[in-house]
Image 1 (cartoon, rainbow, N blue to C red):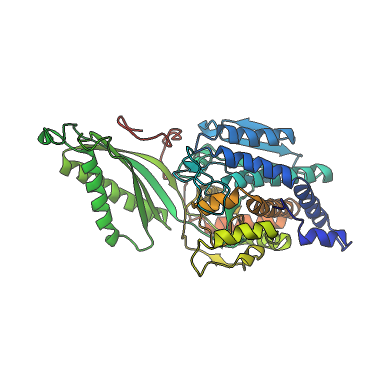
Image 2: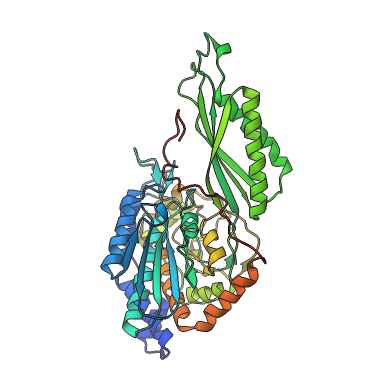
Length: 488
């Protein structure tokens, strides 16, 4: 497969079309650098794909990105916000705006796939980059380095700052970084995410709060002395039953889902420990709070009814994304300039095989080359992200790039597969160029930052004070630890 292809914009520059403005020249410069080093950045992304490290355990992935940035001249602060795998990489050139870029690199548990267009789990590796964060972290790193090189070459004042943010998948790494004040002096924040399409519209997300509910009972022989036992699993199942009945009586935009992480070890032993992991989502954080409280009450009732005891640990809590139309319009313009993803023959054959696994109404393969029309969606839907908490503190813009075969769902084996090939790398390069070009706009257009800041201020409710939904707990560095007796 062809690893990368230069954008149409660079072809125009090569033909000698006018690029007289400093920003225009800068955009050609950063795109050229990213293209010239696309293979290197692709290799970094694929190394992180191979590692597939889970949230707060991304030791090697974080170290690799830090080493890449350090070699490029960035100053690195590691282990920030009490998180060993979190870091801040910065390069300053005197007075000017501070522009931040977010980078993620955690994988997901419970799903695995090799670099194949047919279902092919990797034995002994129950985790994978089903959300493409290996591409996210590497693409953001490429954008930060390209922007730094442009600032250095032109003498542009200001600071480019990359935030290495662990455990987006349920660990809320960015929330702890927000709480630690790491974004307080940043003027604008940029981010992106892998997808099956290219899109820079302005939209919100669902607020989300999660917890692990742990029940403790009394063990006994399930046949010889069942009357002596009190089943912790009964407590979990009773809770789940009550929450499932509660679904009829919550706002229709709500989402509640759970997984039993531990239910016992043997059928003939009444389990004295069981654990269930819950997510509660809604577009409005206030609704999330009240629904979560009802879920917790259901857990208390389940323990009372089954003769067990219960305690729960909040794992993460996220706000809804605060859109910024001003910034998104600028990012959309740069995405249109960069263009979409074009498959070579080998990539097309690979994509066609994956596309056959989708419903008949899946988007066509050629949509990977298209840029979606600009749109604004104020009410959150779909998934959740800890980028949202950042967006309430700093004007924030993001985009999606077609790193997956059109029609792919995040958290699927198809996403892992394509993300491990040049299809994923090409989408990553689209994102890296778009981020770097948008950063140039921010550094060279004070009016853009001023307008984005004013819009951000208008969207914040009067008198609002940031209170993390996860409270004052420490980062749950062991939240991916397998559950078992004793909790955790």
